[in-house]
Image (tube, rainbow, N blue to C red):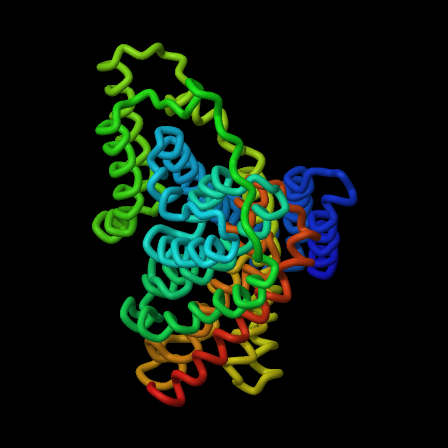
Length: 444
């Protein structure tokens, strides 16, 4: 049954990859795949039942415990995504990110490339790569007219967002997992992964800058009297901006203080922002059907992306339950004879195909934190795991949350991204690993 599940997963993934050719929405395939995989797994549970345990008891335990647990874990990501997308949309619709657009604004394609890299890289380390990608795509929509050129910049956003999230303890889900469990420390990650993460995006950018020559077409000037108008005053818009952005920055603090999942912090920020904007509408006596109200913004959220996450994450969860991912990690360790650079590099490439969260979770379960050596806190294995799992997702557009969101917003096809960015992302990841190795030899 395990072989059947793996084959079905690979077929489903192939269909998702060929969305542009098949003309079937990837979300529909992902949702169907998740149901089929869990059905196959539950129907074949007799092959996984421990000796001495009744089949029905084991089946009920799996459905009522493991399945529900995976639904809960997936829901945390979906609610975080939904809340973050809504907050960013509300802030943006009220002109909150105008200052980012002003800082990035330039007619030079070359200059815009490096400005996008710098802003995205550091913003994703303080917010998260998902939220940063949403912000940057919205800003680019207001700066770049040509869709092809904008897609190139969006690809750069994916590279920079994932790279920026890798050197920060709060910049990526996998890094947060390793940080909370104690595999890495905040200062260890920042000091030793900053330069490798920087190399990950700089090397591809040096190659890409040859395609970014010339000047951008100017945006079509709005006729006089039709310029962008906002419901709120400048002061109120600033309040919306600071509540939204400072709130998102405070989510890790909320997590550490309360112990609640990050999505609860996002919901708290969204609810506060909702109350404040409702008060502003009431005080200015603005009609209730304004498009920028939170209740209206929720209708414009891309639910297809949310459901795609649901299907993919639950599909990977079914694959994880079979033990395939854990076996894969152990086999890698045996074949490479403990070569951590090779093992984590393969995991990085694999994270572009399957979700990096179960991959990292499997690796964390394979090894204990030791007092000294490569598996000690901030040891080579854990830091490389954080780096490769975070940046490897850039190799394919569906390999990271940032990629999936950009894919949904700009309708970038799987094939287009593979042709233009996959090799560059792989080159960037290998460059970062080389930088990490030199750091270890020369300084650490």
